[in-house]
Image (cartoon, rainbow, N blue to C red; front, side, top):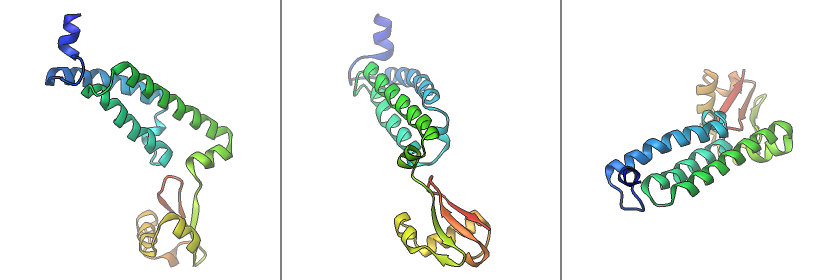
Length: 160
């Protein structure tokens, strides 16, 4: 038991070795939790997926620094991973839940007309729209595209 105390310490008074050992173990625990949550949660940029990234970072760091006991932190992380996974599965089966959790795409521009209402909802300026068209559509202006969307993940997409 003394070797465990030497390597991992207890409470908030941790030395570099103890925090490093905790970080090592938490890395693999986090990897397992990511697998449970689903790899999509770290590959997408939707608000639904960003939430788990931020919360994992905030929560799991507490076990490394000794701010909270490790087992409750890991169980809270497991709970978050399971909730994220279940909401993802439910989103596949229900468009209502999908739109509730992940939002829906908004048309910002179509057939020569800017949709002011959706631009305001998306907090997009005309300059942002033009920039998005140049980046996503590889074209110079709105006149060269048929429709522009604000996608569910916050990116602008272009239909030429």
